[in-house]
Structure formats: structure tokens, C-alpha cells
Image (cartoon, rainbow, N blue to C red; front, side, top):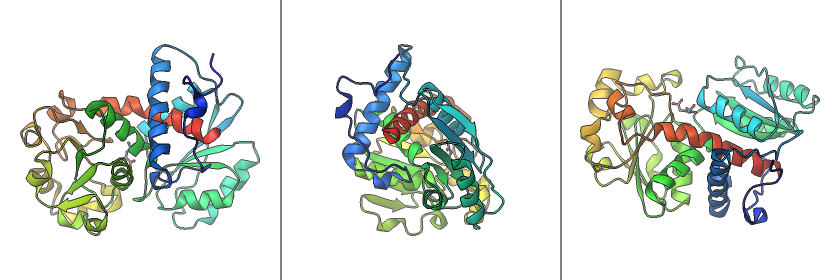
Length: 316
Ligand code: NCD
């Protein structure tokens, strides 16, 4: 059993300055690289069947006020793999915008001895309110359209593995950029690691993004894909009123949906990512999702390793 962070020199892992994780823009390049290295190390330790008890005796609460499969399960598995006790917290989803009830619930739960809360909430900014309302550590697992930092970290690890590094790479992100917290966190993280980002989609979903350094915006899918080193497809966020940005999903799929033929514009071996859940037949074909370029399964596996690394770094 290992009860300290793995690595030949654990102290060499760059410690995080913040005790919360709101978004990746709070992390330095060294903090990001250290987290990805630690995640890769945790992945190999797990593959060898080693236990890591760095959170032994700690309690972690999962507060998901929005649907989630991958993120919730992998945080739960990550916390358990580090020896923490995991509790599901009853967080109100109904009073979106009325921050008080979220704050009240968290203050009450804090008295039970929970130290860290993994929060998913439909309101952008909810994690900041949560951190101001209680003394618990807050980990953002997705807040409205704002940020999804652990998704961006697992995407970066997956792309780093596939491409050998991200510096100087061109990453195309295709689809509903405007409503996507995944896209926002990825733009911060990829540009911080030296990659350039090409955003492509219908004009209504691209507004305001042309002001980000390192980012180009186009409504021309072919131009976004040509020469890209990796391509990320995004789900149309219908629950966030994305449907109003396109005439119909069928029309979106015809113009923007990814298939093997369109991916060939990037290159024969260029990898495809998608945070899930996928809507096959809309943003990508079932054949592409299941095919040899798809890293979707790797993303899910890396989600566990990245969340273990994040929880360990925050708990130090
Ligand atoms: C993403 C999310 O919730 O933002 N999913 C996820 O965490 N794997 C993307 C999405 O829902 O489309």
C-alpha cells in the first residue's frame, strides 16, 4: 500500500497553490504539466494493481445537480481508489440562480466533516459561490456553460499520449462551442500548453470567441479540419437552448457532422475526441465513434487517472 504521492521524488510534483479547482485558467503551465504527469503515473500504478491511500480517513461529497455518468462515476472511483469515503450530497437543482439554497445546503453538510465537495451545477459560477459559502474544498465538475476543468485535463492527457506533446499542435474543436464548458476549458488549457485551437461551427455558436489569443474561428469545416493534429467533436447542448442556433439537427448534421470522409481532410490517422455523451447521427457517425481513430474510450479511462491526480494534488 502506498500512502504518499507516487513518483521517485513526489515533492517534485509541482504543488497547486489553490485549494479549490474552479477552472484550468487558475493553473500555471507547470501545475498543468505536473498534474498530467501525476495522472500518467497513477494510471500505471493502478495498472500494476497498487493501492494508493493518500486520502485515507478523508470524506468527499459528490454534489451533482445536473445529469452525469462519466464524470460522477470517475470522481467516485477516483476518490475510492485513493482511500476516501464518498458520500452523495443532496444538492438542490431547482433553485437555479437563487444561490442561497446551495450555500445553505453546503454549510449544513460541512458540519458532518466532509472536506471536499465535487460540484456539478447548471449555473455558471456556482463553484465560486460554494467556496465563499463554506470552508470545504470545491472541485468544479461542470458549471453551466462556463467550465469543466477535469474534462479539459483528461482531454489534454489523451491528446498528449496520442501526439507525443501539445506544443505547436493544431487542435480543431467542432460543434456547439457557445454552450460548451468543455470547449472553454479546453481553449484555456490547450493554448496554455502551446497548442493552437481552431473553432468551427455554425455562426450562432461562435460569437465572441475570435478575441482569444491562439484561437481561430471559422464557419468553414473543411478549413478547420485541413492539417489539424486532432479533432474534438461536441454535443449539441439542447438543454441549454442550443437548438435555436441551427435550423434543425438534421441540417446541422449535414453541414457539421463528422464522419470518416471528413476526418480524412485532417489526415488518415488524426485522432478524434468527444467528451460524451455522444449523439451518434448528429455530431458524428456511429462508425467514426467506434472506429480506429476514436479516442473516446481512452478519454473515459484517463478521466479516472486525472481525477485521482486532481484530488491528490488538492488534498496536499
Ligand atoms: C460534458 C459536460 O457535461 O459538459 N460531458 C461530460 O462531462 N463528459 C459534455 C456534454 O454534456 O456534452
